[in-house]
Every structure is written in C-alpha cells, then in structure tokens.
Image 1 (tube, rainbow, N blue to C red):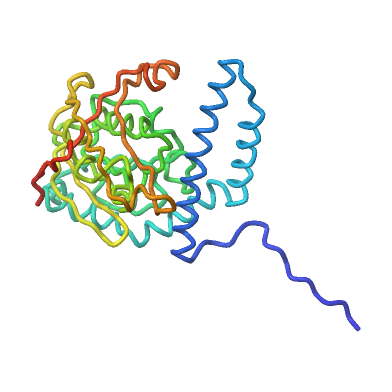
Image 2: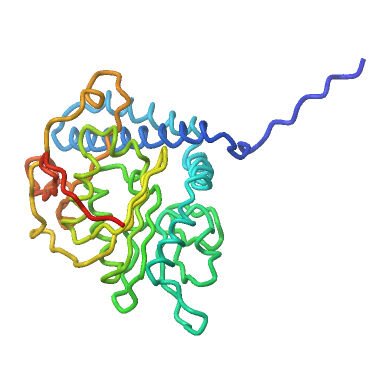
Length: 310
C-alpha cells in the first residue's frame, strides 16, 4: 500500500473571515496590551524601589506568550481590516465631507488634506478628490506610511482639513495616552477642520470610568464642537469641528459623577476599562504617576451636557 499523503501545513495563518472571531481577537488583543502596559509600569516601579520583580517578570512572560499565541499584531490587523469592512467608516467620512462643503468642484484644483490615523485599508486613499496621508504603526499596504502618530511632525503651514481616527483611540493602551492623542490631533488639524472618531459602542456604554456625555464634554472642553453623531449596533460615530485649541491649563476641571450602573461594576460583568485623561505631555513618567502630576479632566459631573448635533 502506498503511503498516506500528509496535508500541507500553512506557513502563515489564513485570512480571517469570521466577524465573531475578529471581535474576539481585537478584544483579547486590547485586554492583553493593557495588562502588558500595567505590568511593565509595575516592573519599572519595583526596580526603582529596589523591590523583588520575579512575579512581575513571570506575568510579563505569560502575557507576551499569550499575545504571540493570539497571532500578534498581524492577527489584530487582519481582524481590524475585517471589522472596518462592515463598520463603513469610509462612506460615513465621504458623506460628511460632502454635506459640509469640503468636496471640491470640478474647477477647483485643491483637494482637501486628510490625515488617517491607524489606516488598515486603502478606502480613503482611493478617493480621487482627497489628498490623504494614511499612517499606521505597522503598515500592511504600500501606500500607507509606517509611522507612530505621536512622532509625526506637525506642518503648521499646511494643516489638515480633516483627521480620521476610526477604531484607533480605543487601541491606545492608557487613558493618559488617549488624552494626549486628542490633544495632539489639534496640532495637525486646521481651525474649523473636521475630526472623525469611531469607537466600539461598549467603550462608552460598559465603562465604569467614562460615559458618552462625559466623553463629549471632554472633547468640548478641548475645543472640539460636536457636529454629528450616530450609532450602529456595535459602533459609535462622531464628527467634531475644531473651534479653538484650548490650552491645557485652561481646560475646565469638573467632577465626574461617581455613580455608575450596577451592570458596569458588579463582579463578572462585561466591563470595558476605557477612559480618557488629560495630562501635560511634557511631564516625565515619574511626575505622571498618581499623586504627582496635575491632571486636567473634563466631566459631565452627573448632569448630562446637551450638545447639539445635526
């Protein structure tokens, strides 16, 4: 009898096709990344204090192994690409730019400049009437520039007419980092320019730290005016206009409402730890630890601020 033919083993994982699987991968990736960041901070603090680090180092090894087993950033980007195909962020951007007069006529030569942060597809790049700079930490497409947004140089002579931040803010591992991203976007965006933010719905509905009214109040305090919002079963869409770049010390500090629904605080609940905090980027890590940095927060304070939206 002839020998049985063995199946060929794929060298690379097959493309992701299941939306359910994609959601699981992205959620797990964010959770592990958040735990990694906390463990790295704890390790650094323990070393500074001369304390034992064995348990923390073991935890870091386990988390890195879990991330590798998940497929790393490559698997995460595949999952993100699949999810973005169904969140329809590109069409939403096109509709809003057109309805707000940003689409040039045939006689106009200047195309609106758009910065797309965390680009995983070429949807915006293919638009003939937009001048798009698409960036990502690990670019998967030839036209997408591989660069860290926080290291992107500001061109004050040619600010962007719009910035697209689709499913990116939730990927930043810390609350202070998300605040710094929203602050830094203002440096790249022209006054009256548009900021598009897309977030998983659970970031603001299942978080014990931040509600949707509080998030909108935070953006308003920084100088962003809400123009439009909508929600799908899984995703929140926001369009802001940059009215002014409020200096960090002048951003109103308001108390957040400490009361939260029991569903977001009970043990075993589907909790999302999404939060946004504002801190001075010039402060170093030592100063930015709790109790040492002066942080500015904008809150709804228990009373939901009503923001007009078309």
